[in-house]
Length: 593
Image (cartoon, rainbow, N blue to C red):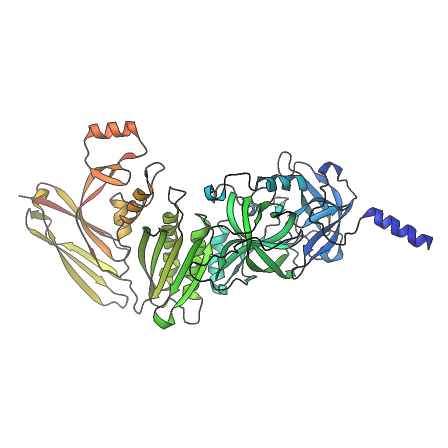
């Protein structure tokens, strides 16, 4: 009996076994953490109930992540965890030593190790992030940080770096495996490692319905699984990790950055762990993402943090594929991030094309889009693509255009809703233009010049059309060019590209006008042009402005007023509507009396 009692006392002094993880445990300072101390880490292995596993402190790696940012190194002594190691999804699992909160599991030390270790972010570093919540401007005055404000923590995943953040697995739900495979490399380029091993219980959302609760009815405990979403609704994309600390309705989690964006506005969602998939390379938690229960507002080096309650404002997205009774509608919401949002929107379009039994692109398709900033401020455009190859090449061209529309220079003007309609075409719209001829190279003012366009459709059938060009008397004595080119190419040649320098545009109205002043993306444009020096006031071009005006304007505001060499259209028309061609031809014409 005495020997049994002595053994019990020795074990009790070595590690205090917690009956439950405390929400408000005292903090154990980093200076009080010593090698050989035993602790418990709480995390969800399956379902929603956290369980503890044992670790032993090996020591402190001083300044491991930068000046004053150390890592607590622990050996994972629990047999269950030795089998799987540091699991992606355990990020943020709280570490308790002697009943006090010491830090959160956050870093994988190495791969293929024979004895499993993990790095833990100290409690004090995480408190720095938690204290930022609510200390900035009000939510109404906050805008998401630019997506490139900080490098993604994933940037070091495939290098020989010793420390790898146990980044949450970004599980994409609501899409077919084919869609996930198409989009995964594109998300990887943004530092977002996407897997299709995940689900969502959010389901269909009504148009305009909020993807968030009205108030803070949910509660979280340290050790609970939690997801931070980039999109919610029919298509969900969320990274799942673990809650580290709870202080009222303030939550701190992960123990490392999610994407390193700084000030953010992202939905905080409940989560259910389906299983842990062990791997010698990197074990992961497979989870279902639940309803929105709050808002993450900080994404920093040492943690993510936010408040339980209402979720953030997001952009509603609706993708309609087909027409009539067979139409399929996908509704979801995306974070208002100008780099991430377009990629998730593209995912919805890819799913509309590939995500059902009858959704092959076939001969081609047409995509119409409407970006709504307010009831009176919208941008609309239409694109046509040909076949499978047109889909692969055209979708990312479409993404570039959509990104430009969302990356406006006025941060407050974020879109409320983006609508897409995907319509499959019965015939391939691709045409090959074989010839472009003008009736004369020397023409008299006041006469009519004829331009003939010859082309073959996708089956090789030959067609042609002739366009009459009235020669304006004011062109007398000039040498001009007659150009046929796609609308996007003609925009670039005439100085009306989508890209604007900082400070060039001075109002959101001017931005919308500039974006609308673009040519159709289908068919071809035929134009009579003359090379000239264009003087730009914001995005409005004036040819051959007086030199005195240019000097005065440039001295007053060189960003707003600019001068560029470009082609000025004197006459223009649009042909081959609904067709796809990448042809460009130039012909020179001299106008005489």
